[in-house]
Amino acid sequence: MKDLKIAVIGNPGSWSTEKLADALEEKTGFRCVAEMSALTMDFENRSLLLEDIDLASLDALVIKKMGPDYSPDMFNRLEILRFFCKIGIPVYSRPERIMAAINRLSCTVTLQKGDIAMPPTLITEDIDQAVKAVRRFKRAVLKPLYSSKARGMVLVEDDEHCRKKIQKFQDVGNTTMYIQKMVNIPGRDLGVVFLGGEYIGTYARRQGVSWNTCTSSGGRYEPHEPGPGIIKLASKAQDLFDLDFTCVDVVETEDGPMVFEVSAFGGFRGLYMACKIDAAGLFADYVIKKVMG
Image (cartoon, rainbow, N blue to C red; front, side, top):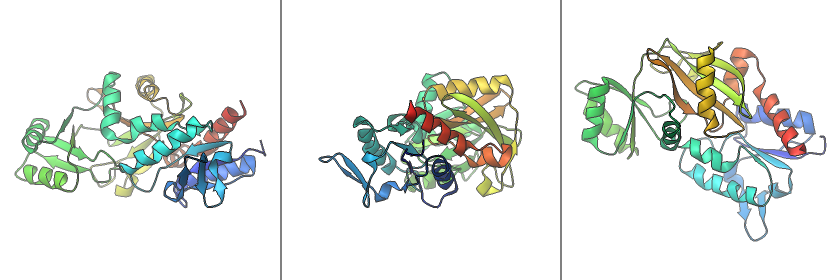
């Protein structure tokens, strides 16, 4: 185990990236955090260079983040790693599986094809149709196709400001608009976490002063013991993506539990802060076991 060299693809200095790198270093004696923007792929020589380190010479890569921001650039970076898999180096999770989850529309299409319960959702580029959707939903959340932690999301209500807010949302770069009905929640939503397809725990994000539950908006993590119905729904949702580590965002509604999304990268902090579960250590053990066969 001490001879293994496993690098973390992530954001240097970020909490989750460093926790995973710490866990792998503790177990293998090797530490490498690689930011995708700093890598060079040489197709001719089959190398992936981080300064003088060729990641193609390592035993495996673990993807924690693909950059500080969600954007279409992540697809280009994942394509590099998809080729990297082709030359025989294990990557966790596999890039093509992450590709299905990082774009909110792609994620939703996969969930809908799998008959996963979700809040009513409409996709359009037409302002008039968007206004009609908000009128029908009464309250809706406009979500960028690439975002996390509610960044860029806008709450729109059926009032005199509706069209103006929708137009502004589209004008800042959201040509394709993802419009989801604002459902009533019991002051929280849930992060249901899986490793290798196996359930490992759930945390709640308790709503603060904002309409969303994100900790950046005043929300807080709490431990939570979900019922079997929620775990079953989340398990069915994550099965559609076959990610090595993921978190399914679930909301309890008047019509039963529903899924917001399946995370491309999963979350360590919520599980650690709420439940004292060291997801980084568990993920490191999982990867090492996979690499060692």
